[in-house]
Length: 183
Image 1: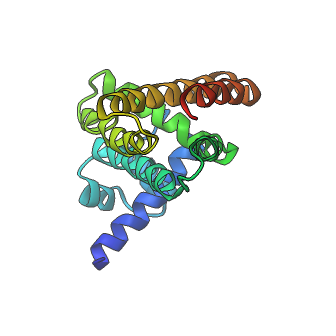
Image 2 (image 1 turned 90 degrees about the vertical axis):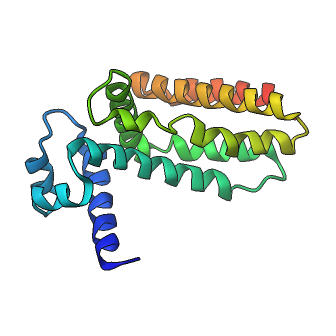
């Protein structure tokens, strides 16, 4: 990684953590820069705009989650699904989940500069999850449908968790879903 790439990554990591802790309400580029110990010009240099920075924040968090999914053992699909769910619902990540939904909603509403977030927000997850379903013996079309269903259920339950903070109920619902979809 180049020095410039390393500097960009350090800034992105700091911004992800700051926004996860504080949310987006009333955030300005200058205030965000000050909070992470840089200038707004450096953020613009590396990310183009506030919107470009926000898109990169979500992409970074999503990439980390896909890496966790890829690292799980596949010999027991139900246990792998439960382990991944435990990772997603870790209380330390709750702020990241809130940030994801906050930005996702803004992109879905067509906020200029944030709409690129929608590119891949679903499709980047489908192949890794469909691969697990194919490994379970499902034909490609069924595996693809189950991947989309699993993504929708997981995101719906994460939104439920953010709204209710009822981890026990959300975990029970996910356990039922896993029981329905895995051998």
